[in-house]
Image (cartoon, rainbow, N blue to C red; front, side, top):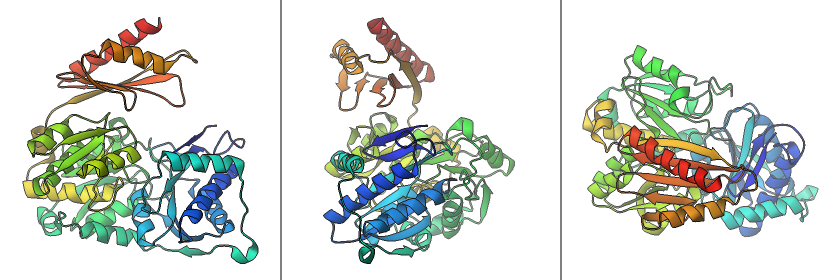
Length: 460
């Protein structure tokens, strides 16, 4: 059993003992704490709730909705939904905040409470710490019977979300329809199975090959949209001679494309491609996290903009985007954040913008991918002795590379002329994650191995 309490929410495996897994007790106490904080800060008593299709979703939703009623909150329950849909619904309903019930790309035994403020954005560090503290102390009163909250079921937000995407000025429905795309979709049997095909139909796509699009929570493969998990999609694309494959994670905030030859476009390049299109029409700045590909920097500079890097985590990327007034941003895991829509990763927005771009280019997906800056990434980790001072180790590595360009806002990232390496410690395990990138796979692997050997030499 696992329970991880962090500023971004409460996630864990279903079952086990209280405080050791995501049990009803843990769900109730942190839901109540977050709801209390929202109601104290807002004139609104409304809180929006939505969930992905994982097996525990209905049970967790019942607990969350009932708990929010118990503190006097009026719940708008979107039912089966997506993370970006809930993010849009919170400000639309003038709610105090929202809760998304999803463990994102984690396997079926996981679930989580993701917490949103009144803007429909993830809460920050200070707000997260306040939720954790109040949840542990439970130092508040629940509502008496006359003050219990209400529940309103609202299943209209799939269409509202799609309508909002279609209304974006840079989404060209006519161009997409005229392109006559044939598209395969793998939604890992979660809510993307209804949202993505419905969006494609609204965009004028007439030929859609749906695999794993039944939102029943029976994940047919590991739900993280990586190459090794998407063999069914690859077969569907090639067997049907589709122009494109689309894969999303269970809560539909990560977006991965597959080329017509059955090979992945590359999750790092989802943001790069969408940014390439946006920057052609809206010159400006971009942001991604420190572990994302250098290709976004290259594309941004080619369009006359300035690229900035943020610490890993959506809330950090959003903060930096606002600071530099970025026109597009996101994360290298397939997360698109388009401020003209909202400040949250949104696969529906990404699909519509990418298809518009592709339709106007009138080329095969593989040809477009070959035209983008080419980089290759290596992802590794080193397991260290429990109790080792990892922060001190990173300081030693920083001293070793003090003459290179580096940043320590999130672990240690070292930028060399042709490669970069990012070292991050885990908050839950005695490990260092090592991400590297270079102009070839061999270069990325070599610089990673060099850094790993140096770390091993330091720790003996």
